[in-house]
Length: 306
Image (tube, rainbow, N blue to C red; front, side):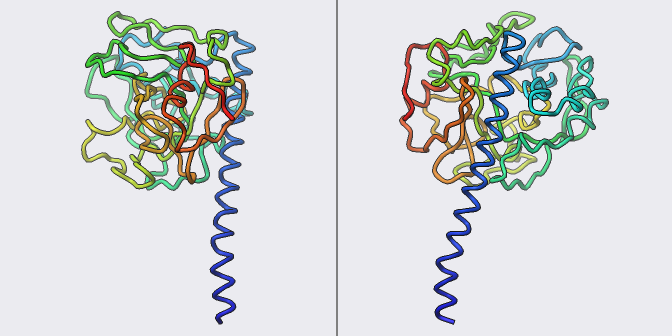
């Protein structure tokens, strides 16, 4: 019995470590497919996937509209061997339309990290587009995503929606929320002057729509205080979200929380996908200035990853 106990004490941690390593590799492969899909789309269309897609509106007129477009993930479905699903999605209607319920509820393994363990298995309470008015009726649910675009880094609270004090990332940010419609920049890889191998396109933001901090659930959906948590729509692979949810705070380290920023359930770090198509595992101990530089596209703060 003593020998068996000793063997179990040795083997169980080894098996758990092997399983976690395998999950991390699977996650890296997911991200590799995603960033290569983005890069291939950019090569064919001469632009990165837009954050807001669909023909029901030319573009978001104001912030409330941003929660109902088809996401950047929808656009790359043909590049990740999901052409049949892409063709079924009706982009003449909002992503949140009841007519698109079957489509956005289709789970896609490429968009889910196997290391996560969510109390909420799907994104509940998807709200119907109501042409800019509230309250919004509920359409149903949506399948989750553990991966998100990074829009930029906020260096100083502005107290306004007008995008002050943000250094932007690779994606097509709104030029101003002070005008209607909002007006978005067309994102291109050529705009990344800091180097494509040093600029993040997509990161892990695992566990949504449940709110986690440092590996522990803070507030599973439905949130007890919605005004302090995240918007649950951002967890759906097929639905867009407000641009501010894609902006990270310049003092936010990896795995601090999954409301914004980079967050995973891997030990000691998280995976990120870069604009050159590469995938890197970034340690939680990475210098904050280095992390901020990786999240921006053209600020001159070029870094070298080892």
